[in-house]
Image (tube, rainbow, N blue to C red):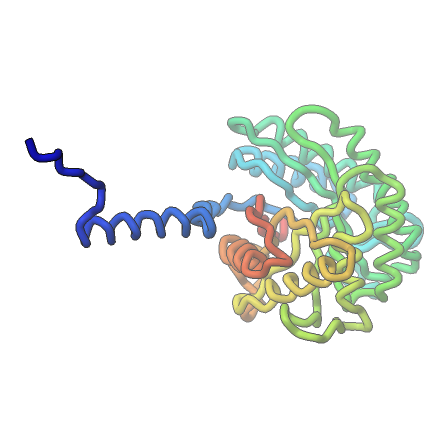
Length: 330
C-alpha cells in the first residue's frame, strides 16, 4: 500500500496575494486608524449687543430676547455685550466712544437685564435646552477706569447676577471682548487678572486677534503693541476658567489662521493651547446694519473655518468644537 500523500496548506498565487493584501490592510488600520466621522455642525445660538438706556424697554426687550432663544431649543453659551465700563460704575452703550452722547446707565442695570433674559428663556424653553448667559463688556480703556478696577467691578456684577439667576435652565458667566486696538495689553491683562481673581465663574473670551500673524509665521507681533503672548493670556493663559469664543468674521479664513497661531504660541511656550468653546460670527448684525465687506461669515462658515484650521496642526488640534454663536443688535 503506497504511503499516504502529505497535504499542505500552501495557497495558489491569487489566494496568497489576497491573504497578503488583507494582512497589509489590517496592519495599516492598526498603525493608521480611520479618522472618526466629522463632527456635525451644532447650529448656532444668538448673542446680542445690548445698548441699555435706563428705560423700561431695557427689561422687556431682554425678556423677549431670552424667550426667543428658549423657543429655538438649543443649548449653549450666549453673550450679552453691554459695552464699555466707565468711571462711577456706569456703562456706555456698545459701538460708542467716550465722546458719545448716548445714555450712560448704572452697571447694575445689566443685572436686571440678565435676570429678565433668564426669565424669558425659562418661560419659553423647549425640550431640554439650557443656556450659559455670559455677561460681557469690552476692553475700551477710554472710560477713565483702570483695568484692574474695571475687571474687579465686573466680577462682582456677574456674581450678583449669578446669585439672582440660580437654578433652572440658565447659568451665568462673564465675558470680555478684548481687542488689541482698544487698550494697551497691560490694561486688558489687568482686567482679566482682576476678573478671574474676583469671581469663580467661567469667563468667555469673545476676543479678536487684530494684526496677529497667521499660523506658521515667525512673527509674534499684533496691533497696538500687543503680541501673541498678550492675546493668549487674555484668551486662555490667565486662568483655566477662560473659554475662548473668538471672532471669526472674515470670509477668507485669515482670522481662523490667526487663532491657530495664538493657540500654537501657548502650546509652544508652556501656557497650553487655547481652550476653545466655539466660534463667533456677526452675520445677523451685518444684515441689520451693513458695512461688512468680507466680514459677514455665516455662523456655520466661521465654525467650520476655525475647527478645520485648528485640527490641521498637531499642536492646536481640538477634535470637536462644541458651539457656534452669531451676534446681532437688539
